[in-house]
Length: 218
Image (tube, rainbow, N blue to C red):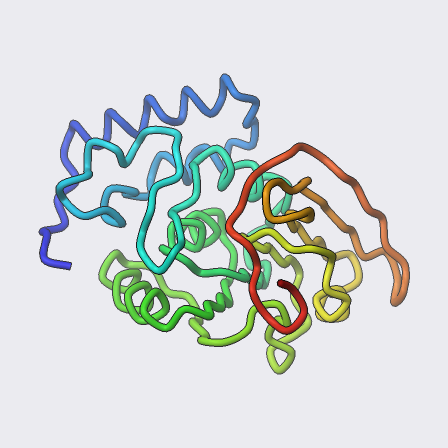
């Protein structure tokens, strides 16, 4: 991307307003709110659209994908209950915005993206922003078995069902957060792995994500 990395008072002020907006919408986790306040979301946008960067909306990023709405990112991150040093698998790197939020709250992030152009763009951008994650190109619906187990897994695309292969990659005590439903709307689902084959499942609010495409999804 050709723009310069500028973060001035205007952008900083816009992030503070966004944090206040997310508080009003029910986000309570201080770590998550602090992360939203730190990550320079406008760096993921073409300079032409910087005025859209701190609105609480999703925005197209190419390849049929979007940068997620900040509320959605905060909502999913809050459900993960990340502790510093947690090993987190992110399925659907996309723009990398969610990746940065996970890193800001102290996670060690393994992130996988199936769209090669997005993968290359994000793998290049995040280090320039000062963020270090492990990037993988491939079918996220199968997870990344050779780096498992994970303390937390977050899926940032809508799945028709919960892929069992992802549950197998969780540590006992680990949490999976995944939107499940049809291609029009999904319910946010959290699954706590309480034993080798035991799980505690909660079905929460309705969202709309791009579809999770892969061997174990759409």
